[in-house]
Length: 90
Image 1 (cartoon, rainbow, N blue to C red):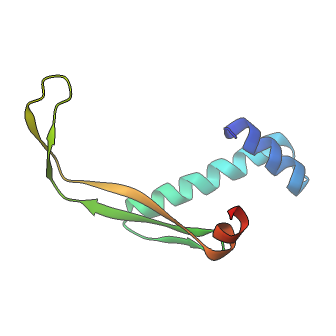
Image 2 (image 1 turned 120 degrees about the vertical axis):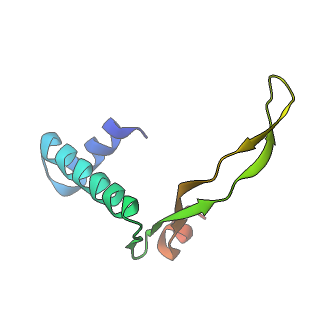
C-alpha cells in the first residue's frame, strides 16, 4: 500500500473526502515527525510506539573498495508494534 492507497482507505473508512483524508494523514505524520525530532516518544495504544534511538559509531567495510571505514553515530527512528497490531498480523 502506498500513500495514495492509504488516503483512499482513510477516505472510505472515515467517510471523508480524499482531500480531507490527505490533510489528516499529513497532519498525523507531521506531528509524529515533530515529536520525534524533539526527542519525544509517540505511543498509539494498541498500534505501537515510535521512538528515537541513538546508534553509536561503528566500523564497516566499503563494498566497492573493501577498505575499512568508520560509520558515524546517528539517531534513527524506531517503531515497536503494539499488542493489537502484532496479534492482527499473526
